[in-house]
Length: 166
View (tube, rainbow, N blue to C red):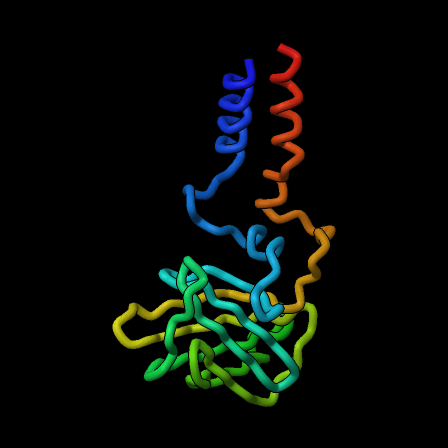
């Protein structure tokens, strides 16, 4: 009995997940605290962690095993978009290696809940990558429904609950 139950639960979970096995979703990163308290995204072979402060950006680069990726010789750029209606409020900040696995950029920008930061990263011997961050997104579920939120753990609950009665 227990083995088939587990198989049903795993099957239901896989059906609900739209990501290939091994990929980390934004929800995964938002649910797990990042090593430096920033926001993490996946970009190609990297995990990128962005820490956005007033007038300063720090970008940490690790691989999928959380190993540090050296940023020496690399270049990066962050495009900061403030607000949705006016595309002209865009600021570009150059990100430069700042030792170890970090790039740092400073500029005259301010952060609002609508701020979106798009990071482009080009490290030696790797393809260029980009990732989109929304640094000020609250950790709690927002009231806006994103497509991902429809596939919430509630669905898993219903599936497993449904199967338990059979």
